[in-house]
Length: 116
Length: 111
Image 1 (cartoon, one colour):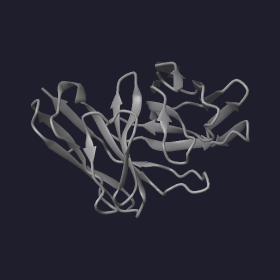
Image 2: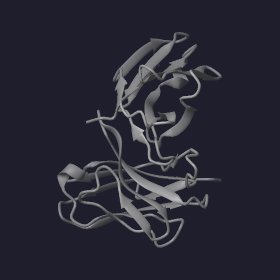
Image 3: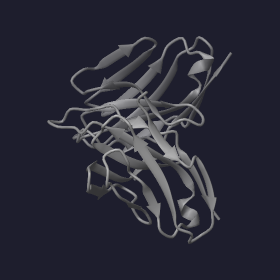
Image 4: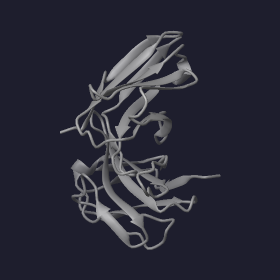
């Protein structure tokens, strides 16, 4: 079954305690990205990756890091979480667009993070 | 500043009625306009999408209407059912991968 998995699904942590949210896809997709979803703001892209070892900032990258050492995995790292990073996080993957073709993005089930 | 503005924030429709959600955009470089449906506890999933070279696309009870000159597009759900109750996001893309999302519309269909 084609899917994007995220772990953990729920996380409560304290300010400043480093955490990692894992993301894995089994569709051999080149493109992966992280979004955060906040009420009234929709989904906003944090970081994206077009292939292994190729990552770049999205619209709201401050306070986050990512890595892409393997094609299937794209972890999101919060080195020093703060309360304003309390949010619902989604990982997504798709085939890489070439010649402006568009491909469906597949989303994971989400990780609800609370930082106190 | 949101590049894609979506309205309404929430919508209540009677079973069998028509649900209409509207989106507007500014960037004329956008050339792909998908709608995503999200159920509680799940990630968004692609519902239907349109390119600006057509004015309408229909898939079952779901229709996208696109007005290029007005830079607006809308989702129509015909014969709305309680199972359609979800959050709907419009989005736009100009480079084939990055999606810019609207704020979302919470739809409730009353039986």
